[in-house]
Image 1 (cartoon, rainbow, N blue to C red):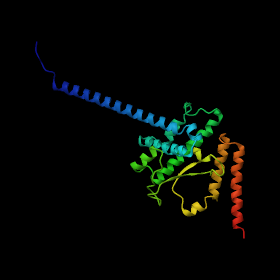
Image 2 (image 1 turned 90 degrees about the horizontal axis):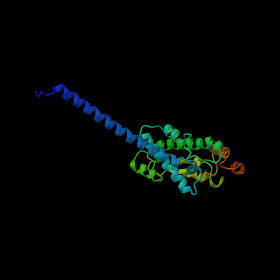
Image 3 (image 1 turned 180 degrees about the vertical axis):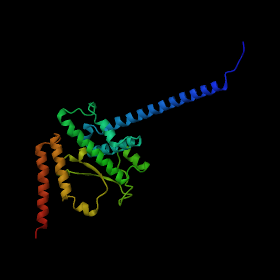
Image 4 (image 1 turned 30 degrees about the vertical axis):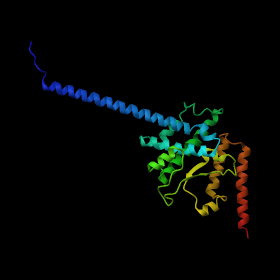
Length: 243
């Protein structure tokens, strides 16, 4: 029998096949790891965007931590080529019953919409303030701590969380996710005028109060108290301006 060696072309073919097989294996491993990482982000974000996290916090500090951590996980998802809208669409999916188990399922759409819109708007605020632009800020957000502003006139100052409806108008409002806005610190002039909202701030507060009422998160009586609070504030301001 002859010991004829396979032609060089056969070795080349085998080498190509081995290379392709290894590349496919590596691609599969990489894809699997990316999928697992994305699922972890969705799970974490879901826990911070859930109905209980958004509306049932006992303490203001916990509510604020929840919002900041949600910002971290949205940013983490965006780094993996997702958009904030895509991430939140996955979180708000109809089958997420473990996160949205309201006793009033007919109120879930507006409750979800409030969470969705709040997270998107706050993510946009974080982008404008540059809160994702360094590792120290990302570490702070992951812990639920306030980051430092990187962009704009308040560069170097710590961001804060404001309330659309003040607790004076609606006790407990400071613990509701839709009532929180990540913001630069107030100027002295803004602090002095915090009890006299602008027309825009007034309209936004009334709209949110109506949404909270429609979602059965506050009672009609609480809604009327919010409206009365702003009417009284407006009357007091008019009296100050009167000659």
